[in-house]
Length: 385
Image (cartoon, rainbow, N blue to C red; front, top):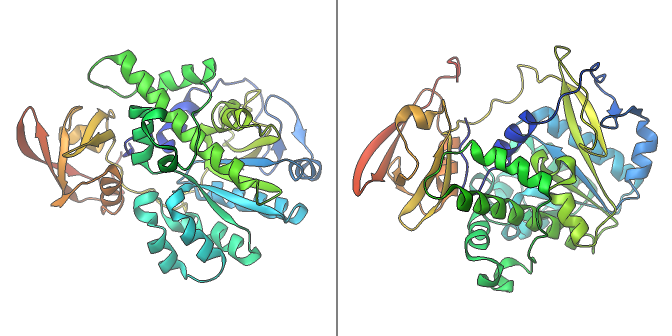
């Protein structure tokens, strides 16, 4: 199971929402082809001609899937050939990383310097090798890269304190989000139900929804702002924020950006496969099932956490996870990890993702007024999760 920062990481959202997608009893899409969800195969040349005239094109992903990023690079190249007046918006980095992105595109930083300047390890944490081919594409063609996310801390402040409680200058001028569509709330409620929590469930759900809307709105605002500098903006975003036009596309429309289109990868394996449901996206590209030589995913603790003034508080523990086996519980406050103080959830993210398989991570936890050490054992790669 996966470690999550203070607000729901896209990866968990994707897994949960994808599992809830309706199935259709029909033949599988053919790998390497574009399809209209619920409809027929699309002509790629005609599709790309259409997309190049849009204001915003959104490319979904599962963050740890190398084949998803290869597909994104393929789409970026096709769109750039038709409309070189393009910018690329990245969910991966918050606004604070924009100077590093500008310097990277200008050729002023090598890979190591860019990763350090952007604070990639703490801001995102997924293996940069998954994204470097795309970053090099942008650098080669001098395509502007735009950081469209905000930090988990700011997302937490906006979700907890409300928009009036955070000065406009501290939220990069991002305006309050449009209300969630009913179908989106239903999907988020399904995800929330998978996270045990203490306290009032209804209040917890409302905070969960508010956090997701902050995330969607921040990215939509970043994409809309980038339109002022480019004729076409392509956003690379976790697919849970894009499916059925519920998340970022809905917020874009509220910001007056109606000419957007969502593209998603769709995995087929030939066994019990179903075509994508109608309304899922403008188009999907069929990919063969991930092969064993894909990049190994990082270690995962399996907790949902929120900020705490003494460290980070565990809001929920995922069933079957490393955290559950170690005895971590909702309400625990993690003070130290591997002897290091935790000032924000991203600190734990970085530690967990660097954790070698088959090793122990000591955690100092406060529970019921006392402190205790808990050892989280991460399985070897050969072990079952």
